[in-house]
Length: 59
Image (tube, rainbow, N blue to C red; front, top):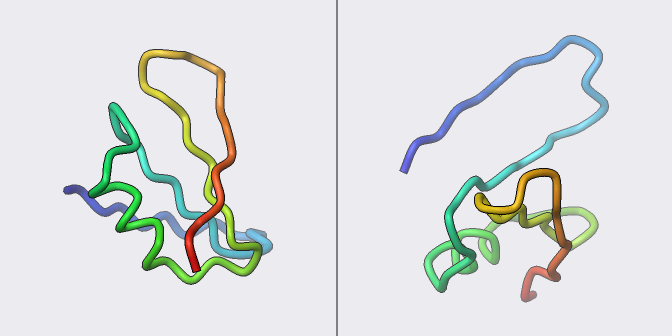
């Protein structure tokens, strides 16, 4: 797993992006542990460029 932190002047909040081939159990477990204010994560499959879907993060 690679973790990258990018500081950006003018950012309005914290954005977390998980890049993976498939949203498997390990990925969903990581997402579930994140404390997101709006309680959802956007998943972008690696094989589908430009397409994304939003899945709820379990409480």
